[in-house]
Image 1: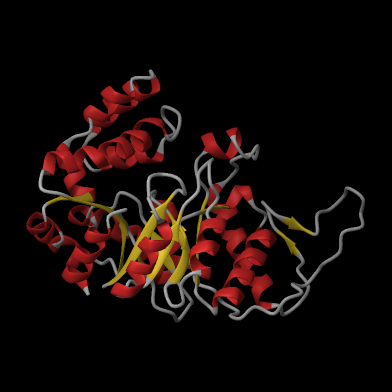
Image 2: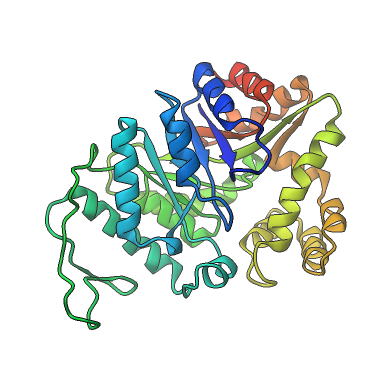
Length: 338
């Protein structure tokens, strides 16, 4: 299994992201990943650490598709891939209606249609086989109407690779199936190796439709908190789980809340959401079950983490993306996996 490093959002607590990435590269980590929501963007920090490293792959987990046209994403990925010597891994996702409509001012639309067309357009741009003329349901390029002056264009630069690997963030069954069919990898969040069977049916359905010959990479992130007191380590993870389960989406339209319910934590998911949306964030954090933390994160002393990683080692995951700001945690994971 390969290891990756998840830096998350810039400014979210990592004391020195560059030093952390350099240590990961020295230890043999395969990739580093950055994130975005409605704060820091994912590309700028990734470019920064890419300029100060030489081998580690550079992944976005994730670029929000509604924030950028397909052409802008294709240009950005091709440029960074050229600058980095072919190290880019393009992670894409739709985010949720709350961010898409409330922050980017875009209609959420039909997510499966939008994702399918977006990937097809990006790959056509990289291939440079012809000027881009795409008339789909979600995207019309050139757009019809308006001034009438738009014309099909071809990417000016020549990409280093005609097929940069695309990863999709997906947690719903239909989106997971689409990832298996179209993408080069899948970025699941809050992945529970003990429950991976719940994911495999839609993933296999997508892989059965897959035409690409390249191997498919399952790349979940796992938060790792190393310390002598397991309870204190769990307390580091719980605010993030409370934020996503309770606050990343409206009631009835929160994909992370739905995931916790599918894992069997219906009552806890309901309570966390009620408290969070009412403004009681501390109480929502306290309502996150210890058992849920232990399913999706690795917390405690080295010996305990060594036991908890066993289900990950036998899972279908082929890349494990470590979310940690502790250099010593990166070293422990390298010892256990590399």
